[in-house]
Image 1 (tube, rainbow over the protein chains, first blue to last red):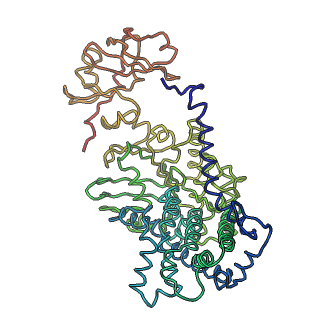
Image 2: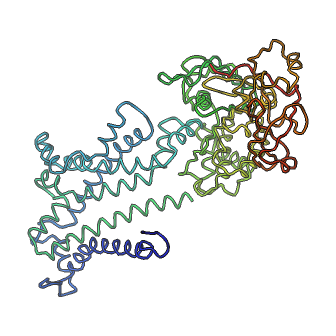
Image 3: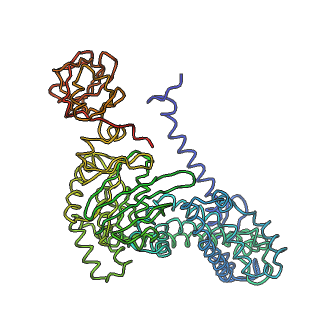
Length: 276
Length: 343
């Protein structure tokens, strides 16, 4: 008979086994990132491991924009993509937060359908890109198309993050308390409801921004000329340059994502500390 | 402060009638409790008075002002919920000053008012803390201070002590009772906890299935329940027919007190109104529960009627299951109940 006592198999090996699985998973997932980052400082990669450390040549190529990879500097591409992603996040906040609030707060006809449409990805990026080209041929080559596309593709993440925040608070009672104290509904929403859901909004913004900045499929279909979004910039570097140049471009992207995520978390934490 | 009048109020949600033709007055400065089982409509009445629901029929008046269709933010009602619903994005002081700020009170005055209330409730030192870091009892005080800061015409308390431990509940009950008495603010206290309602309220309305069964003082409701529902809901009652008591008590004496009784008449007898060890009624002890201050006996009479009897713990210590005891009951303590209270 199997037993779950102190000397049983699960007691002896369960915890070490789980630890092993977690460590193996983390190593498997992070190894390519770490290796890519390290190799971006190598002069060459012949054989199993990169060699010729330490050089900033690859980073220099990416940052200054030589004609080795992409023909523009990473700076302009980064700024452009960051701006597009911010635009997408702003739309996601303006549309996603009210939808999440309505679904969490009210019981109305079609509520479950609204919820399903809000949290299901609308379409794969490539399909949405083709649809945009067909429906709005004039608009589709502009930055506006990219912003709208990013917001449509990433909106489920915002809705889910904010909805989770709303569901974890006593939404109806908080709202009713504020109104009984004399606040109108708009004031209650802006000064009580939204600040109380701030963690969810920040989390949703981080996810939406990160994914929008890295969105390739939609960008590849819709982008035609001018400064390329970051994902296209990376693609150009990866396809037209050596692997080490591509590694530097990918590292720039990872670094940027990490910095933005940390910055947004610091903003959130500082606000929480101020409250205390 | 104000006198609150509900005049033939009905509230329907689709085909469900939550409140059915209820008329009720909360007098100026009075603490009125509404008790009843879950789903009886007590919270709906509170929400109607607060303005979060609109009555299907009837009118609600604050003094002589018809507020039936006035939005909640214009009613000047202080509200304390079960979970307190504090604003976690603000400090305790900001929570308390929120209401006065919404009503245009100046910064200096609202700060003074907040300090005064926080001192009154003995939580002044928590003013700059986040509500998230407070215990349940402290949060309850903040919720109360926030509701009182707008100097409300009416204070609505919706199960404000649910979720607190028994000892804290007892302390807060006493403090809250004293505070409400000192402030003299008209208060509606909604609870399913009859003990809280009995100890804190000037009058109690017992609700069942959207109707008010009885409105009276706590003592009156306990001693003279209007019907079987009230007798069973408030405290414990033995509901027995007059036939079951024949030979055991002098039903003629009850007849003298309440003429017009017949065989179908139901009597309510409280478990602590039995006298053990004397009297004509024999009963066997089927079960025995030690409750601390009292011992609860479940006994059955020779005709199979089951009764609940309470005795002091020192008397109950000598009893065991299977013992036969004799019971008596003072006829003046027997109440005639008129129907089950069904509508």
